[in-house]
Image 1 (tube, rainbow, N blue to C red):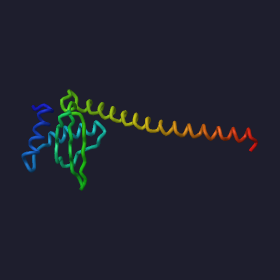
Image 2 (cartoon, rainbow, N blue to C red):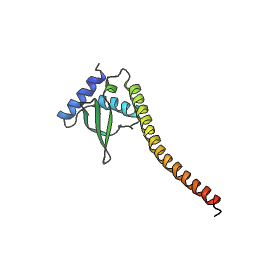
Image 3 (cartoon, rainbow, N blue to C red):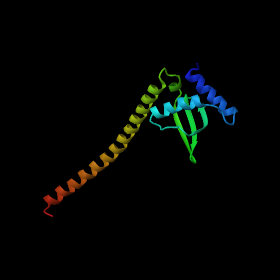
Image 4 (cartoon, helix red, strand yellow):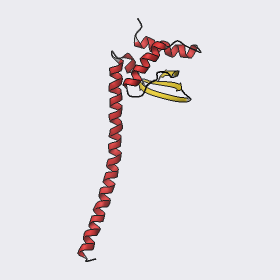
Length: 132
């Protein structure tokens, strides 16, 4: 029985060699990873390319219904004892990072609007004190 790494490496190789490679095992593995990570399902898609970058990122390109999709996740997920669990943790951490970015973005806006509100309140107070 092949390891997940062997399934993955064979699929990378076969995609580069064969026009219609038999990579069903890899498709199932990669689909379980993309689904668990919250990236979406690749079931029914055609895998166009799989690459592992020098920094340890898997880049998966698929094609379905006229659309190309790209999925990225750490290669360490392939080697994990439980890839679905590792993918779920990756997906949740990615989502948390996204929300940290949203919070930071909206905090900047909040600070701006709080400062504007303080200016308006100061103008109101000044106008009231002057009897206007």
